[in-house]
Length: 455
Ligand code: PHE
Image (tube, rainbow, N blue to C red; front, side, top):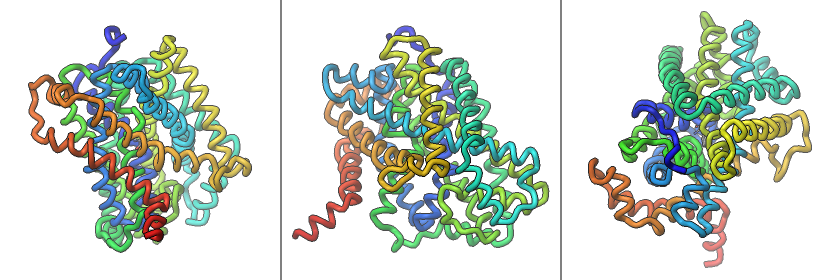
């Protein structure tokens, strides 16, 4: 199977496609409202620690698995550990990708609605209350969100059927640089607003007493979600890496750029929100209410709104592509079908799941389980449970199942590049990452309090 597999065409293509996978709504939509509702800079601090000590080891391990096997996320475990239950890590990933796509494609659709509204000038002249009410009315409606979700899924589908190099790589090469330029322009705009420093203070000056177990779990979940790890997305992308791609360097560059984009998104949003007196704790609607509101009070307001929502849509698209590819590669390889058929099957599935998630936000009240609309439930279950658990098992797998010699050969491209911290990496994978992730869970589930009470 590996013989006829395509690879990304260039090193730049590898980085941009992988950064495109990592950078998405997670950085620009989810990260700011997580920071806002988890105490500001304290969350950011824990988040960065999670990226460094948990995210990077998991990321390198995933890249190793993908690049070594050249298989999809489930197939790669079948190859490295034939006849064992390790393949369930891969199945967990495929399922997680599908569930994430359910709510992610809906939010992606929302970005298109706002691109449209900015273009037609309908965001002009609204008050904060108008923005809040209009967003609630739109997102809990029936047809409009479903229409935009459909459009987004179709766009993704077209890129996916063009293939890895001609579709994914080419699209990322154009979209990622544009995204960086727009983001930096918006940061400058936000920082030059009156009172911008209060927002910057909220983002960057940690109040350590705000850190608690729920903040830690949220930060860990956000780190996994943002880096696209724990579910085999990077296994799938690394399966398209050529021989000379350097795993360590790729992991460090992607993690650094992803974190940079998240922080820049914070720099863009908080000064603006504080400057206009908008609460940073407004949850999932934060960017959809805060930013258009801010922009529309400035000269050329609709232009800024338009630029921002195009940015959000581009970021979403490159990530949706990667999630789609996880499932498509799995269906294509494990069921030996054509890319076109596999992609169609996945696109239809995402669309149906998207409809259900979209309706659960308000139009159909019954679509709630465990006290959460399906939209929130899928977000919670994937980011806070499936990805960290997946990451933990990936570490345990690499730590116990892969010979150190083989790991080192892969990490150093057969000794041609140096890996100064190889033993530290192995130590982290074997002991720190897996134990820490496990402990964070046990703590959040309330078991630590329970055991302390027993003692
Ligand atoms: N990392 C993406 C984002 O930040 C979301 C994602 C999660 C993509 C998992 C792929 C896999 O938006």
